[in-house]
Image (cartoon, rainbow over all chains, first blue to last red; front, side, top):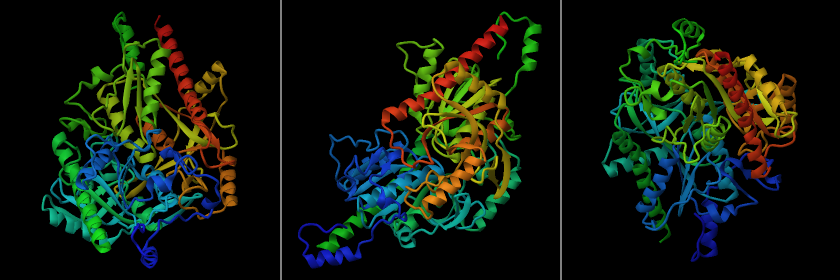
Length: 318
Length: 318
């Protein structure tokens, strides 16, 4: 947290020492006279990033721009920061690549679908937090997923993000060579989220591995894509192996999210609701209302976490 | 084209024989009592897909929803199909995953950024065209890219889509195993597009290879991401090797677009404008107006192609 008025110099120093900054790992950045965050339509010479974003402590990201707007409205109410007359303007209004909303210490950003789409957003978000000199940032991906052996509507907090062969790694191609990165997430934060679900008592939440794939149809063993070269039995055998390895849900962004957050010192978690049980089907045939109510669960869970963390931070200062 | 009134049975039969249908390769599809195209918010039991889409002969796809709306407005004017009072409604208005617009025989669909995002869209688009019983469909991706050795604003029509090691292939993971798919595009269509650019005489167009990467920053040897572990010289050496192998531009969707269109019998081309010369920089620092005018070039080129093909088709029937 940023030292505020009322702290003595000594207290400020102690606080500063315990602060965790957001890292970039790029020696070229500091030599650039400006940095244009192209896909956000923001930049260091056109925007005062420390003034706009310096207070950010929580970042929530998700695929859909609508859902990220609805999250900022929800969290504004939860934190009693809402202004009934206020619209929450899209900070990235000059582009349609991503949408971004902010209220107090909470930033909400959309990332589209798939590893490449979220990776572009995260490169620019990490640079934004670095330029804004943010400290002690917690970041959570809230998303949707297919479940394995779980009732639809169950929320999965990711223990490890694994690839299509169930290994906790991300293969990143750099200059044509493949580099393997770890997809570890913050275990303490995952446990805290599980505790939040117990506090709330509104829906089932489990901790499990999340399989991150490059494709929604063939990549997730669906039988209903434009192409399918395998049988129902092949599908079931694959999903059973995934379940036996500890996979409880399947989505398309967690591995690069985990890898990039780890590299930049962001405390990160992935919280996805399961929209269906993939061992029982492939199509998303639940009603719009049911799917919508499921999608609110990760928001409710993360909203509770943010309130708890802000309360703990306030009481440690008093 | 669909036989219309005024054709004799014999003519109809000849036309039908020469028609090329849109293929799916999935024996499970025909056994499904309905098919929900979830990310389009469309389905076979909720929408009359043959009535809505049966006349489609041209599909234009691109990353940005705004650009795909502007394309449908542009093509409506070019084909004199515009109605000054008409709004072009987003056919996928019930979801924010993709946007879709249609006028006469032309469909315009956004696909987001990266291979996984466009792959989800293409699975559902191919099924849509199949359910709608469309025939003789031409599909073009219009996009933006980084150029190699070209003046910014040059348009590249893709000869081959290559991966980060300059090979014309897509690695698709199915049930945890890697399958390699060809990324061939229609060479006749590429030549036709080059001819359209000569007809127009408004901007430079070349045919060259397009490198398709999984990441915008490290994956494209940029020096301005949140992470960078290589030097300026490493970057230049890599881009020089790419250029020597025939690569003229770099983007993030062409390989899976080429592979999936080939598998489904769609005549496909990729037309991307270069927004900068990557051997001279990484940041997109041109003015909004300049970048906007560059982005219109693929639209103008494809608009001209569609007009020419419709005129040829009309005169062959008269």
